[in-house]
Image (cartoon, rainbow, N blue to C red):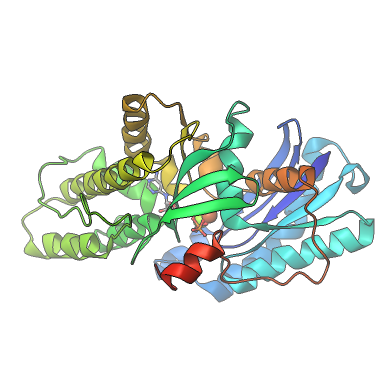
Length: 341
Ligand code: ATP
Ligand code: MG
Ligand code: FE
C-alpha cells in the first residue's frame, strides 16, 4: 500500500508518500521560520494561516514527485494531535476532504506516534520492543515501545521539554530561531567546561526530567557578563546531554527485553546527543538506532509511515475523528501521574 501523510501540528507543513516496504516515494516540506523569527517563537495564528496556504500545493508537489495520482494512494494519514489546534485542524480537514473525495480510508495519527515509529522507517531491522527517548520541541519522554499503538511511558519532564530548553537558551543568548541548531553551532566553537551549570535530577531515584532550572542558570550566567555566548551554549548542551544520558541509563535498567536503544524527535538531530546515546547503548551491548537528521524534526514521511504501520494493523479512523490539542501516547501514565508529569 501507498500512504499519503500530512503534517501541520507546529511550524512545518509537510506532505509525503511512503509505501509499506519503506520506500519514501516523495516528501515535500515548507518551514515557517521566516514568518515566526521576528517573534522569537511560533505564533499559533500565523502558523495556522501558513499551513492553509502551503498544504494544498505541497500535496500536489508530493504526488508529482512520485509521479502518481491520488488514485494510486491507498490511505490518507494526517496528524490529528497533539499540537497547535489551528494547524492540526488544517491538516486533518485536508485529509478528511481527500478521504471523502477518493473513498480511501483516513488514518488519524498521533504526532508523537509519528516520531516514535520513525526509527522503523529508517531501520528495517528495528523490532519491538525498544526503549525510546523521545526528545522534541514539546516533549521529553522515555517510552517502552511494545508495538503499534502500545506505548508505556516510563518518564516525562516535570517542566520544560528538551527542545524547549534549547529554544529558550538560544533566545537568551541571542542566537536566533529555531534554537536547537543555533545552539549546536555555537557550542561547536565553545568550551563545555567553561560555565558551571546544574544537571537537574541527575542521579535522582525518580525517573523524570527537568530543564527549567538549567534555563534559569543560563540566564544568570549570561547576566553575570563573565562568559562568552559560545561557552554558555557548549556548557548548556553538555548539561542537557548528561541529564538525558543519566535518565536514559536509569530507564534501561527497567527495560528488560528491549531490542535496542532508540532516539527520535527534533533534538535527536543533535550530534552530541546522538553520540552520547550511541556510547550508552554500546556500554549496554544494545544496538543504537537514530533516524537520519531530516527525519528527526517534523516531516510528512513519519506521518505517512505511522499511517502505513496503523493500516497494516487494521487501524483506520472515522471521518468525524476530532483534532486534539492534547493527546497523550500513554493515557494510563497521564491518569496515574496527573497532567504535566
Ligand atoms: P513535538 O514533537 O513535541 O510536538 P515539535 O514538533 O515542535 O514538538 P520537533 O519538530 O520534533 O518538535 O523538534 C523541534 C525541536 O527540536 C525544537 O525545539 C528544536 O530547537 C529542536 N532541535 C532541532 N534541531 C536540533 C539540534 N540540532 N540540536 C538540538 N535541538 C534541536
Ligand atoms: Mg519546527
Ligand atoms: Fe514533532
